[in-house]
Image (cartoon, rainbow, N blue to C red; front, top):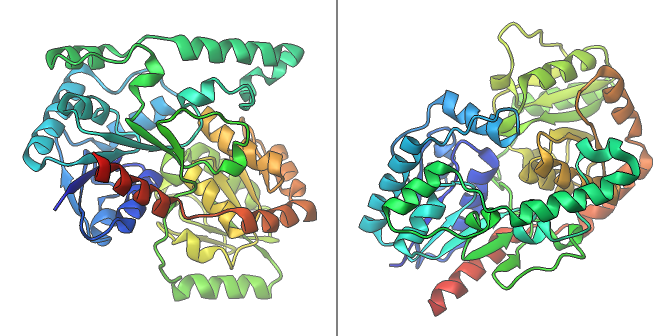
Length: 408
């Protein structure tokens, strides 16, 4: 039976569930194995019926936080040291040698880009359009918030930055050293290092109408968790009670990359809004002494897709999976981008009209303005988008993978 290895960053909830959804769509004639260096969301993999192989070195919680901080631009310290990259690649190569997969599917497990090339195994990269090679060549990409204050200079400055980014050839020393040890020649351009043999774009075509994609790029569309879990009696009772009191129900979530300080600021503002009830799977991100108000239901995890018919709007971060789940719900949302990629996901929705963006630094005044901006027009746009927001990305991805392996 042909084997396909999925190699997500298992400390990233959206990415892990995205890989699981694709694996669930593959025919039973394929054997799916999952590998990674974290146990954080591994239970979601095994609960779906797949085997998960925890490789070494296992990431500590602190290292996971460091990787997230680096990704968000909050830290310039590269967490992928020479020793870590060397050991990770050795572990991946040992697994690949033993199991001989026909292909590897990844999200942002950075070392698998070396291992797949060393073993000459087709690598399929499932990713957003934002920050890809074609994205850097696209003149219609959103201008970063940090450049907005430049006025008429912002467009030419952003164009120059994109040109520079597209031509950069720098690569982390840890990656160059490890590649050299195996006789692997890395791609010339920096952005090409994080390219797959086939790249499946999860951004819907609706949000990238003018994009020009090369032959090894395909749009599959949105992929996010579809766990089909029922809401608990506690959640349903809470919603019923709050509705009876005439309150709007807000879903508050910041994903696995949530910023506790931002959440505290949002909650502090909401403590004075008795007209809004909050359902929030953010318990792990809050301090133990955080005061929980009666109109809040704080928990560890909720099946977001099951909440869509019960909430009025969402307050989320800009992770693509989270944004896509909100779009598919037909309800509007407020979102804050933790880094530029997330800003891009939000900007597409703001342009369409179903969302409001909250920019950092977060203040009570900005939160109040964002809530005020959720007017009937935004609600109508959210309902309209739901009609055109197709969510068969996982099935499309699986079909493309099967076709690729059939001709390999």
